[in-house]
Image (spheres, rainbow, N blue to C red):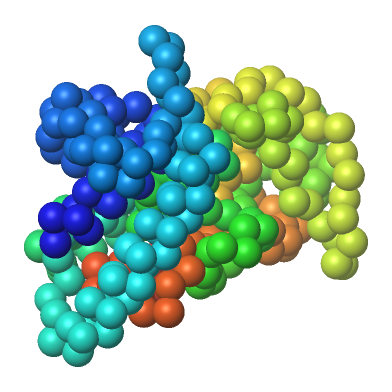
Length: 295
């Protein structure tokens, strides 16, 4: 077990890029991590990292050893999971990456926490394209297609965006009845943080896309400011349904042009390819698939 633990430390250093960062992940000091790596290098008789005052990188031997260690760790975890999966209680730390809009998924996340109290969640909110394996995530929730062949995925559901505005705004500026009416309104847009492009409003008529140069009154890189401004009658916005479901149910926002919107969003949960899922990852994947779009 000591040797397996040392291999785990090596993997964390390779992924984190420093002794200190690896120590934070493991809950030990950076010096303890450094001593473990030094002992491992002495035992193997090779240098695993090229170190400088500003950075450290794997040597050729280190890169080869990293792949071997990952295979050993994966096989050990698979064997452990296979032996215990029938009776094991899901427990331990679960590291999950969610999009910035994932804050709006917290009702489902919190109910998962209540259902599995022995799982401790480490949540990372970002819209960047994370490397699930290199950065040590157990699972990632994202919209769109899967391009990484090292990952397994499960579709959580599709959704149709909603165009919404506050009743007071509509009373003052009129109620759009066809997409072209939006050209006369104040439109609040979401900008993708990665590309800097505005998210298009998925307008259709009889199955065909409608392209309009909508007014750009306000732009935000996250959804919460757009909800806030729409509630306060600053304009009309187009958002995923989970972002505004509560506001619509409370009458704070009104849904518009429902017949002119296409299904455009797909949520997926991704996780590193393993033949046998650990109980905690299996519990998370199954729970999100059943409950994220329930009701």
